[in-house]
Length: 292
Image 1: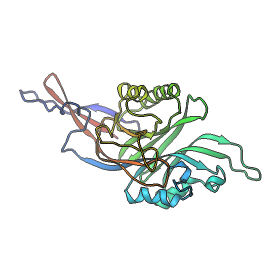
Image 2: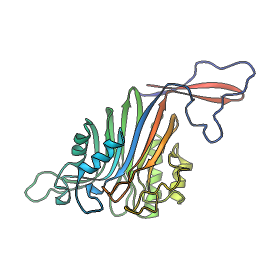
Image 3: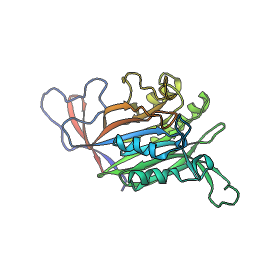
Image 4: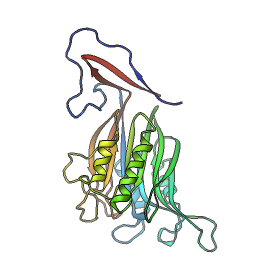
């Protein structure tokens, strides 16, 4: 059922101090309302190969499991790609190791099978979830060189429908700028709680990231966190991996996790979903409900 944003049940008709969120936090849900916490992780897994050159999906799964991630966006994921990943469906295997039944894969490269095989060689992104995935699409982004995409899943978290986007942007500024414009367009098609994560291949101060922050509903959940560097491992000096969140979401416990299971470090944050927030207009408080 299509979600509708409804404006409210009542307004206060007498003089009072408006219940307006603090400056800079006006998009957060009202405190004290019913919320559900969910741990979100973004992880470029380098097709399961760590800094020691060893392929080990068990290490990747352990990092996810030990940190309690419930919705995970993975980048650089192979599916029957080749010997470098033992021809495995990596999304399926990691999900099985986690004990999660819900996952989707977006093949941005879709190549002819290896000689003697019938399975196509795929490379792209994945979303694995503890919660049911209602629907999913993978949209190709305008790309120079390697094809990039935006994997979008609608996840049902205990009745809250969350739009989850996962991407891996290009290596040059022009490509990333165009790709971010396309992501803004795609994500604006859906209302309500949204998470955008992935490897953006650029740092927060660049024009591309600023375009996303000023032109979309998203904020950087790691803004204000000291040195949230994710690349390269083992001595990261740049933040190029992100979790962006939208309205109707509180964020907490943002952190970078140290592991040498990949050439990127994973990041994780706890989001809090809420159906209710308050906004003020000309001295009147309104309640906004996100209806399922």
